[in-house]
Length: 585
Ligand SMILES: [Zn+2]
Image (cartoon, rainbow, N blue to C red; front, side, top):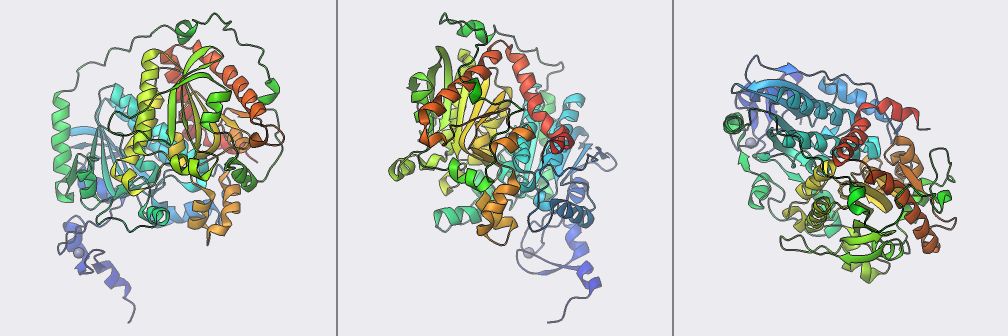
C-alpha cells in the first residue's frame, strides 16, 4: 500500500465510523458529520465556536497566563516539552478557548475545550481560563455555555489540577446563586475530573450525538471489573436512558437547541440581582451550649501539628504510598471512636441506597457537636470487601451531600475524614451518575454556609477524595497521600508500564510535605515515629488536637465570610501558579 500524497490527505478524510473516504469540503459543509453513517467527528475549539455563535459576534477572551510547570513534572518527556508540542500542533495557547458572543442574538460567555491539546486535560491554566469566562458571565449577567471534551484532570500538574474542579465549580455556583443559566454541552469524550465537575453540575446538560461521558474510562472499568461492558456504555443515549442528561442533540440541531433554551430562560430571568442571603448568628453562638471555654486553647500536643517552618523527616514518596495503604492504619470508624464522642450514625441517600464506603453522622468533638463524614475502609479482607475498599458509589456521595446540607441547616460544622483509593469505578456507578454525584458535592461544598474541615487520613484518591475535601482548612496526616491519579494509573499512561509507579509517585508530589508547600494542604499532622498504625492512640490524640486548633477559629467567622474565604482559598490555585512553583524544591 502506498502512502497517501499530502494534497490527497487535505482533500480527503476517512470516517472513523464507517471508514468511508469523504471529500473534506463536503464533510466540513456537513459540520464534520459523516453523510454516510452520521458519525460526529471531533471538532477543535475554533471550528466549534464557528458553528455555534452568530457570525461577527465572537470576542475571544485573553488566554495568556504565566508559564507554569508547578511540579517540574518529568515522565519520559518533560511536561514543558509536551506543552510546547501541543501549542505548535494546535495553534492554541491552552486546551480551552474562551469568548463572549451571541447565539441567536442572546449574549453568552463560552468556554470550549479542545481535545487535541493534551487530551483536553484540565490543568491550572484551563481551570483559570474557564473560571474567568464564568466570572465574565457573572459581570455581564449572561448565561455561560461550556463545551467539554477532556480525558480528565492533567496528571502533570498533580493535585493542583484536582483543585481546578473546585475552582470552576465555585464559579458555576456563583452563577447559580445569581440566577444565571449555565449549560454544558458534552462532546466526545468527556471523562474524569471534567465529567465530575463542571460538565455535569450545570443547570442543563446536553450531550452531542455519539458523545461518551463518564467518571471512569472504559479501559479502567474493564481492568477493574474484568467484565465486558454493556453495548453503548457511557454513550449519549446511555446517559439519556439513565437520567444523566437533558437531551441528546445532533450537531446540526445544537445551535438551534441552544437558541431555544437561551430564549426560554431569558424570559424568566429576574430583572434585578437576588437579595443577599441572610447572615445567621455565628456558629460559635449556636454551638456554645456545652459550657466549655471557646477561646483558642493552648492545644495539647502542639508538637503534633507542625507549622510551616517544621521539616518532617524525608521519606520516599513510594514508601509513603505504601504506608498510606497499610491495612492496619486507623479507619474513619476508628477515629470516630478515638477522636470523637457519642457518634450517632445516619444512613441512606433517600433515593434508594445506603453506601457502606461512606459513614456519617453527628458526633461531639471536645463537647462540641459536629457532623462527621468519612470514607470507611477496613482492616481485614472481609471488612474491606464489605466496605467496597472505601470506594464510594453515587449513593455514598449523595448520602454525604444530604448530611452536608443537614449540617448547614442545623448550624453544625462539618468534619470530613478522607481515605479512599478513588470513587467506585464500576458499571453500576456509571449508570447511577457517579460523575454528577461527585460534581454536585464539590459544588455544594464550595458554598456550604458552615465551617468545613477536611483531613486526608490515608489515601486521598482523585475526585472521590475531593468530593469530601473542599474545605476551609485541609489537614493531612504525615503519611497520607493525596493525588490526582494513583501512581500505578499514572505510570500506565505516561511511562512504558505500571512498574514505574514509584517514579510516578515521586513526580506527582503527593506527600503531605509537598502538598503543604503547594498550599493544597494547610497543615501536616505528624504521626508517631513508628507511624499511625503502630500507635493509633497517639495518632488519635494528635489528630484531635489539630482538629480543635483548626475548628475553633472557624466557629467565629460569619457564614458568608466563610464561603468567601473558601472561594479565595481554591481560586488561588489557578491565579498564583508561579508562586506555588517557587515554594517547591
Ligand atoms: Zn461514516
